[in-house]
Image 1 (cartoon, chains in turn green, cyan):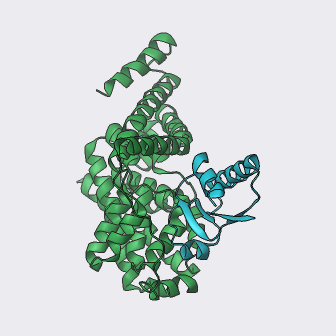
Image 2 (cartoon, rainbow over the protein chains, first blue to last red):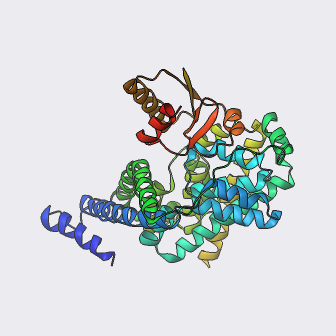
Image 3 (cartoon, rainbow over the protein chains, first blue to last red):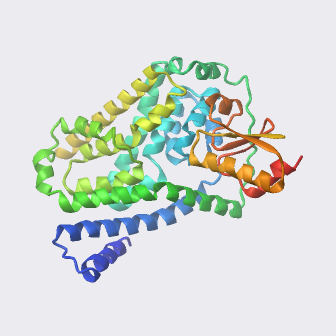
Length: 327
Length: 79
């Protein structure tokens, strides 16, 4: 079904614009047209329909669910809810505090917050349509496991002691104060439609530029960087290429929407899966702007621990995938 | 004078929310004082997890989006 976008791009770039399918510019432009049209079509259709379904899910419900769980169930469901709950990164501080003051352990809250930027419906959709279901499943699995394991380790380290004092106090006093809660009524179809339309506009206005940037970079890589270059330098999965990819990803900041077209292009060039995955996840999840925000509720030491833990996790994942795929 | 607080980290939606409330109030001739509040402690105190949130005279009335104009009128006029 999606091959219609390949045909559309061929028609526009090769037939109408008269560029050669052999030329670098032709290949780049074809990649760009095919991916942008496909991505925007999928975004509109899928964000709307998924939003219809999950209109009644919100962070308050997730909090109430997580507050009463056994710890281990908590990490898994925290990570899962991070993947499916609609939530914008400018709310991460209030969400963190809301969870903490409800007595949810820091590890479970962080499992939620770390998984959230990595996995969302837009990312899964793009991965599925651009790089196929195998990589999609792997990406989702890795994202969930990283969230769960990091959460678990944070609780083993008693991370709550490294929160800012007011947040630690709120955690200890959990249950004693009862913040005002909304009483959610069942949603009518019309309310769901209104929510889905709002959600669609919100997400589109946030990600459209990332689509162009990401696809633009992917297209440039696709047309202008020779495959031989990748093969010679990075193609055989040299061990140091994974930590390097993670470190290169840190100062680059993008959300999942922008990085997936780049991922597609890197994989097409023959960059090993583990290296590619490590690079992309580090770009999305280990971003300085978001970490600086968390400083409001955490001490530097805890921030550093989480950051290093993420870098280590992505490196290990990259190595593991490279080893599995090279043999 | 109605005291309005807009709770949020200072993202564009919070700025728009504050501007909306001010413009609704001035078009209806209602005196208000709109304040932006970015402190995490205050958000926690009101149990707010989605921003922007709106507090009118000490009561939380809204969270999670830029409010509708009709809702703003109701908060300001319904007293």
